[in-house]
Length: 108
Image 1: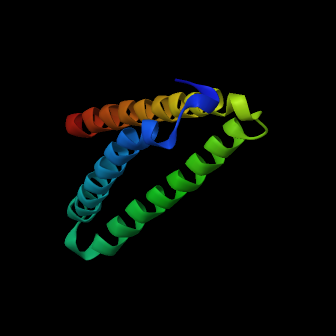
Image 2 (image 1 turned 30 degrees about the vertical axis):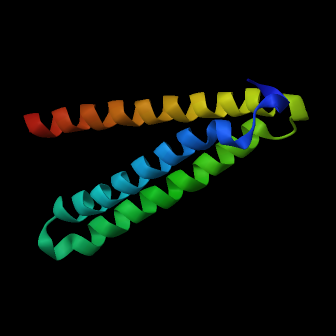
């Protein structure tokens, strides 16, 4: 099912799973951000976490909007799939950076 034939309920399971994962991840990220800094800098850890979350959200919304803007009604889901692939690529790139930084910090 693609294009105009796709109904809202076809994407609902994926959206529910993404929302659940996002809620669990955000709670653990906030805890890790505060726990990973010295106690007198807990506010700095929380602020860095919130800044990264808001900046990521703003850039993500901008990216998805650019990718699906100006589409014809039948092309909306094709461009939506491109947006999903792009966000997956950026997420994997971020994961790779974190793994490399963690290894570098472990060696030091």
